[in-house]
Length: 116
Image (tube, rainbow, N blue to C red; front, side, top):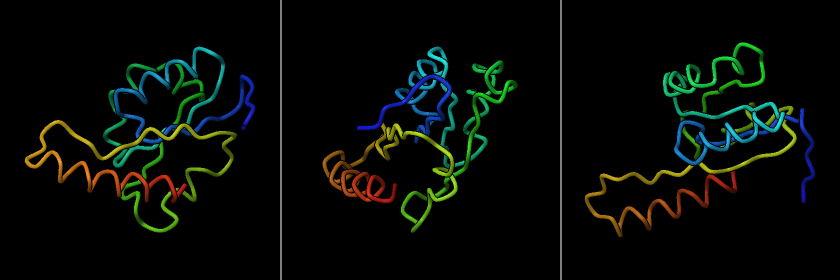
């Protein structure tokens, strides 16, 4: 089990997702520094506005990880972090074949977790 203290840097995967955005808020409010991954830096624009003070003070930063399944995709993102909150997921609400997409998403999520 990893023990962290305020001031430590936490990596949050899928930072622009619903759960991750609340984790960002919680970690910042408790004194942590946060690095969030997004598939495209444009996807962090809303979060930069919401957490403007943290971004400007250097307590919140974003890194781009465009394809989680590429070997070593997170190598740069994990450098210098003290802990990882892995909440990225490929699920979405517009599934044409929900069961088929769930099976694929599950495999994708497992591969993503193993890549960390």
